[in-house]
Image: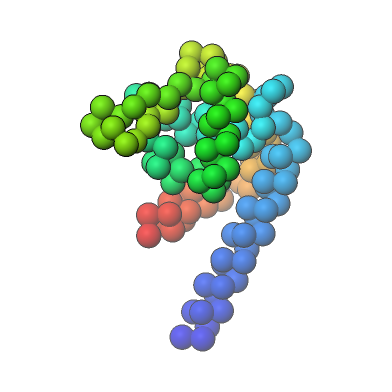
Length: 143
């Protein structure tokens, strides 16, 4: 059991270090001219939900605290990148979606960010290693 616990903790530490390293590298190259990596994360998550999504669901999909997400949504709305509306199935909830401009910005930033991800990840791993890593991380994410 001690060997399994040691391996699990080494794997966890390696995952955290790898995440910190690649996020530092991605943060050094903004995905767009007027968009941060965190803003891109929100726009990208919304792009996967064409009908929009509740703020609570969006919060589960991004790496931001609820207060930080609320402030960011205010800024993105002021810039015309997102739209908010009441949830017709629950008047207490708000649905957030990309505006046409938000979709345009997300797509442009996505191309640049995708090239950077490809450069960083494929620069360190072979195709077989990338496929195995993706499968392992999906397995871990699925619990």
